[in-house]
Amino acid sequence: NTIEFTGALHATIVKQVRLKNPSSNTLAYNAILVGRDAGDFSLPKGSTVTIPPTRQSFINVEFTIRFLHPAEAVLILISNKVDGIDGATLTFSLKSEVKNIEPLGMIKCRSPCYEL
Image (cartoon, rainbow, N blue to C red; front, side, top):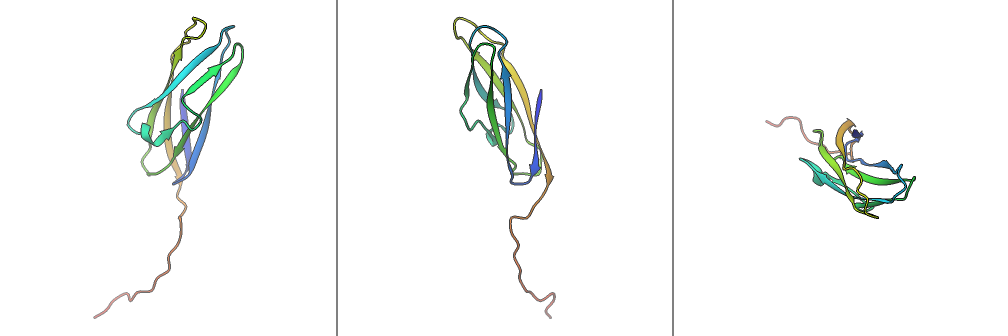
């Protein structure tokens, strides 16, 4: 599964990853970010998520586009034992793409084009 973060340069994008628990037991996961650009991604609401039986929960992933080159990382969700039950380890590929560039500001200046 790939989660794409697309937007303007310097934009902050938050994506929600929906996790479903079809079992009758509570599941808990610890999330970690690994990879070349993992430091550019963050988990603003924490790295732990608990999913009640037959329910769903969300984990937020935040990314600020700082460079023109695409950023790549991997989100790994590792199960914690709750009620003696282990969930499957989940992985998601995180990729970014700059769609447009908006200027942060404009500066006007005067200068001679050429001086002898």
